[in-house]
Length: 188
Image (cartoon, rainbow, N blue to C red; front, side):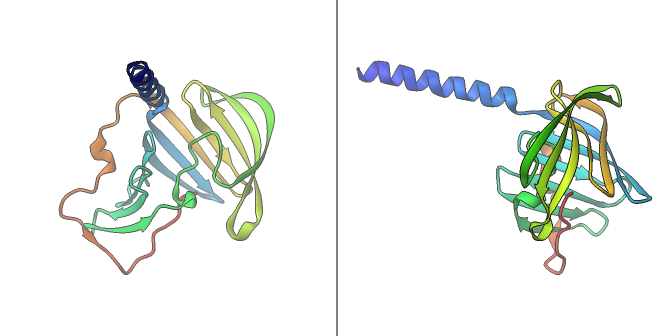
């Protein structure tokens, strides 16, 4: 009896490991953010629950480590970083279910930048509990959004590539000094 329970437990552990690994998305993508008349280009790296967001030519970038429950905002020009405990608002909206989602309405499918995507109108709880409507175009091929749009902003992901992302992309480089005077930006 003990032996069959151990075999069953081992098989279940193996299955969960394989299934979890199958859903651990590794992606790089170009990111175009528009807020009003301001357009910013950047880059997004994803490996499971680890994210890195680079903001174009800015020396500032963000690393989100879901596995460590940490958020780092790095200033590579000054060789400093800010660390904070991870909150849901600090995670990039790159999963199908959005942070603070309270309702979802399917709106069919569309092709955005060459990617077939499910289009949805999503209601999210925004800052101070205020409801906000976001339109999401989510690629099931990549398990990744190709576009998100709010009332005054959009984020588009282009040149999406699945493949191995080095763990070093989600680590602090040696020689950085913690900056205790700044408050980290929250991702949108």
